[in-house]
Length: 72
Image (cartoon, rainbow, N blue to C red):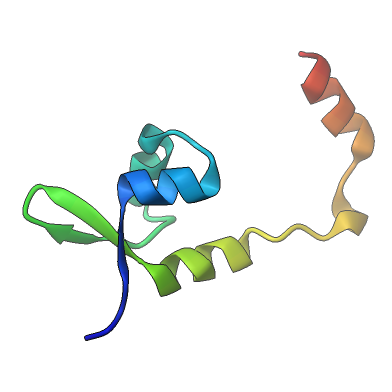
């Protein structure tokens, strides 16, 4: 098995989010993970697949909504 496994901290660093956000994604089932003892590991291919699913079509974005969210 040559599949690279990432820690939650490594995933968080790559995504520039908190570790808790990664754990929430895992708990919700949005990001598949493997349990190793008491820790979670995320396969690199699963992270890449998750990110590919998150791509947004610019034609579907309402820029006014984004501007309002930035002001809040």
